[in-house]
Amino acid sequence: MNQSSWALAATVVGLLGAATLIGRLLTRMHHLGLNPVAVESFNSRLRAWWTICSFMAVAFISKSLTVAMFGVVSFQALREFITLTPTRPGDHRALFWVFFFFTPLQYLLVGMDYYSVYSILIPVYAFLFIPLRVAIAGDAKRFLERVAKIQCALLVCVYCLSYAPALLYLDAPGLDDAKRARLLFFFIVITIVSEAVQFVWSRLYGRHVIAPEINAARTWEGLLGGSATTALIGMALYWATPYTELWHAALVSMLVAVMGFAGAMTMSAIKRDRGVSDFGTLVEGHGGVLDRIDAICFAAPVFYHVSKLLLVG
Image 1 (cartoon, rainbow, N blue to C red):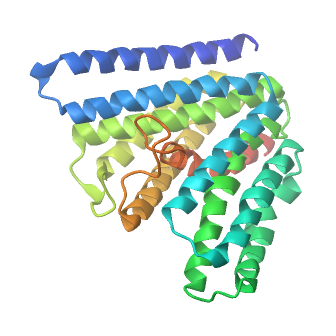
Image 2: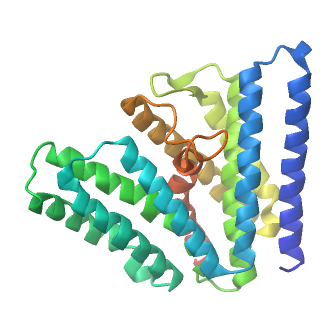
Image 3: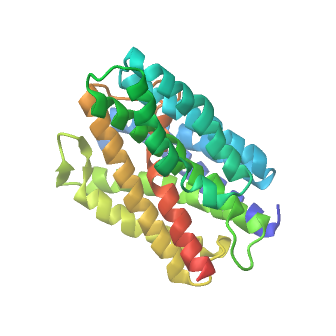
């Protein structure tokens, strides 16, 4: 790690440390009349963010290990998604191919930097293979619904998330491994920050809930205020990115905030449909893995392609 990488890591540790201290103080300041459930939820999110940022340090050490780590996360998120939406025996053969062929192959291709192949493997070839394999099983009951569910799970949990470690192989003038690792770290940090500031804006100023039947905590004030704040924080971290213009950092940060919101709302709709509050119980304070990475899944491909456009020109 060079000096800029250490500075970025120190900044993140400082921000998380300050947020943790504030969270601890809020739990003792009962006279403020804050909702203790909301304060505990904030503190639980902080503990999960510490864990995620600690794991992201691997990106500065080994690209292959980072890709493998995201592959494991994808596998677990895919398992939670499929577990939440019941399957029929006719789906099991297709799921075998999804879990043990397409998922590892996608990350293998990312690790080998075959962009021309991994960019179409799932949206084209897996998309066509899954309905064929389900049809061969001979069970036509709710065929379209079952196929769409498997395709959606694979697309969100594997394909979209794989664009995060793909940042380590982004080919652009002037980029070296250290800058690519900082770009990935910047993306994860901005995603976390966007969730935090949207949460704070909604708690402090939220008046207009966007879709109360889907997520009562998401407000227009939280989305707009959080996106603007995230853009400012992204500009403040411009020095750690490979972007050549200050507004580039602001633009991608705002896009991450918006796409993170889209991911959270979409996953909330799926959970409301299934009548559950979380995808699982693996991550403390956030339910399952998919509850924690829904924003990252939706933001990763957009961040990758916009960054590539800005850096390559």
